[in-house]
Length: 294
Image (cartoon, rainbow, N blue to C red):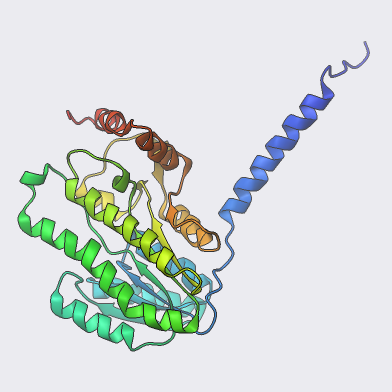
């Protein structure tokens, strides 16, 4: 019996080409070209003791950036710093500070404003809370606004003049897909993240032509200490991303144009659904999948 001939060789070839192209695209998406910020390369990262902040620190250290790591937990920062110094032969400065403390934030802004070698600021410090607005303490609401809104604005203001003067720099503000949803449980969290998006978009318009890039990074569910602290919802695996995946997407996007960066196809689909009026239905589905009644 002779060999069976393929009836549609052209279609098979096209399908194979598309498949190969998708695999190559995915591989390229996981690779990263270092953002060229010129001059002396020092990156400042808040919330650097764990999660996304730690992941940013490790990726930027691998790119040869000197680092200023900021968080409340000094010992954790020291451990990360020693490892990165030993592995990458870079300079790492550790600053233990509480960014909702007025004295700490004032001292930090003065320190950063006096430095002329900062080419990247990552405003990553943040926290979440679970429960209806009225069930969360007034202090927690105030501290969330201080951390997500005030600290982001004043630290950005501290480093911008020198970035503009050197005509190069990048500011990444950690937001969330929560900025696109309207609903119960995380009212203040979503509102403060919405501020970060609007702040970043307007600032980038203002900085057009200066060489300074601004980004609002909007991740969804991340496998990190953040969700451990507020209670990890029981959701399908495809909705979760690893910290390194998120930070790779973020740093890649600095070489492109978008200000609002939503990593991961599942998160991008969620945001699209909110924009066509299905946000409430999506929230209801999330609650159902995670075993909550609302």
